[in-house]
Image (cartoon, rainbow, N blue to C red):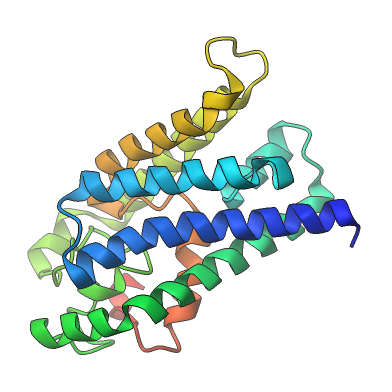
Length: 236
């Protein structure tokens, strides 16, 4: 692996780590510790995570920090397909490490939350806590999902929310980073992308939790499976 390639790999790993650490960390603090109040506060922390990740790692890798963005750049722009596997691996590893770090920080609070709410890991109701690491629909908001709530949002609706959110996020990234777009200076692009993510999460998190990032969802799931932090099969 050449020095340039190694730098890009580390950049994507660190950038995705920061994104998931800030974002899922805000969910962990809200659910396990009661630190955040409302969806908008969580969305703001996610947007700050995006901004920090882009500003710190953009020069190293371009700060894709999302497999969907990497695949979009490879398909529409001139990002080489041969580098796609490297970027995807870095993104999933970064997200996995972030999930492990958050569990190390919040496992005591998570255990207390389970005890106080009578939650048995892997049983019905455990989605109230599993939402810290993975996307669950409709958004549990830190509470067990009752049957009427589950019927409120269908699988198709949750999928469509993720599809629309991911598409709009990619559209924003492409638009704000397009050299031909004279309406925004390049140094402001990270903040514009972060603001877009805030709006998307605020609007679409209620039906689907607003992931818009395969690494952000799948890698933490792979981490919490061995820990027993598994939501019931109907939401896996």
